[in-house]
Length: 371
Image (cartoon, rainbow, N blue to C red):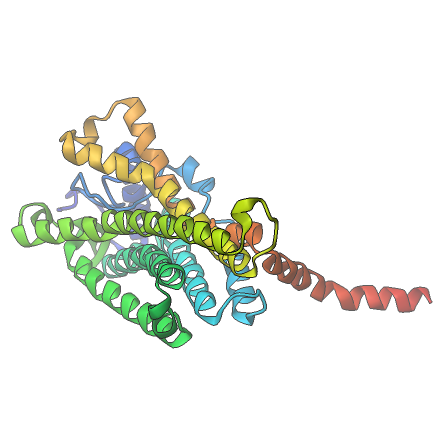
């Protein structure tokens, strides 16, 4: 894109001109950013990527403040004092780390930086291209780590023969590392889908999706593959795994009750079923939260694809529905810590101990002074 001829490209005026570009860009593409059709600096509509909201929504975006909660979860789970197996702990730490990376790359480095620091090094084309790749890779990891955790719990509950071989800390580390590397490689081509929107003093600014991304059959195929990988396939896998797990639990519970004589009204505790119940509650709350928070995005995507509706022609209600979908997707990266607190009593104890730890010396010092 060529700049107006009357623009002063001297060094002293460059910053002011960039501010002007950034301000006009936000004003021009307000509605398109809101429903995820444009990335900041993008000329091309209908980009199905998780992008940013309007400024008033960025301030209230739920992902920013819970980031310390994710750090807290990583710290507590890494101590391995929550009564969880090493295998389960490995998955939960990986999920919390991926969620934290999504918050950093999407909310802090992209959304907040874009609206509060519109002219910064983060808006240089190579830098924002890398941020796009990192954000998509972190989002994919967050989603697929949830899938791998669901699969691990499915084998642990339903396939006792495979449990000893697969449900180990070493296997979990290999699965998570392999998944992370593959997802990073899958998103690497995204770097080459961006081009500079403006070139000032030979410096490329902002990221604009190349028009060939929407016409070249290779890029169209890549975009379709990317959509299937996240979130359509994980959505279907988690629903299927949970359905099979529930079916197995119901059958196993009836058999165990029959063997223990509980079908005749006897009330005896079953340690095995109690342990399994806690594991199932953790599994279902995590996967259920994922399904619930991603469902609006999936429904809007299917509506956009099947109905063939142009999102730039959305009605007010459709626009709000799409907005809610983007917000809930970011929120899905902030809920697991609260799920641990609600479902795991030992996790709550560790949180209390962590909060009390820095206060203990102060209390002891005050007692000594009073004595």
